[in-house]
Length: 76
Image 1 (cartoon, rainbow, N blue to C red):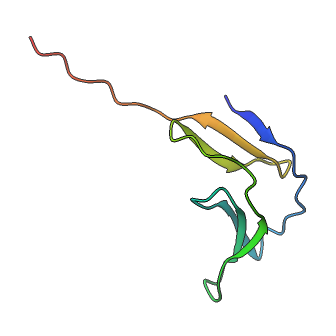
Image 2: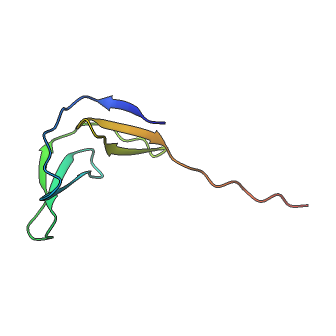
C-alpha cells in the first residue's frame, strides 16, 4: 500500500520519456532513447527517507511505500 507524499499533477508522455525521482529528491525525466541528459521537472520535491521507496504514481503525484526488509535467520 502506498501513500501520497506530494501532489504534482504532472502531465506525462510515457511513449517518449521515463520519469523518476533522483537521489536528491528532484523529479526528473529522460528520453527513452537514452540520448541526452535528464531534465529536472521539480526541484527538491521531497525529503527522502531510506526506509521508503519513492515513485511517481498514475496521477502524476509523488508517492511512497515501505521497503521490504529481509528477516534474519534464526540460529538454533
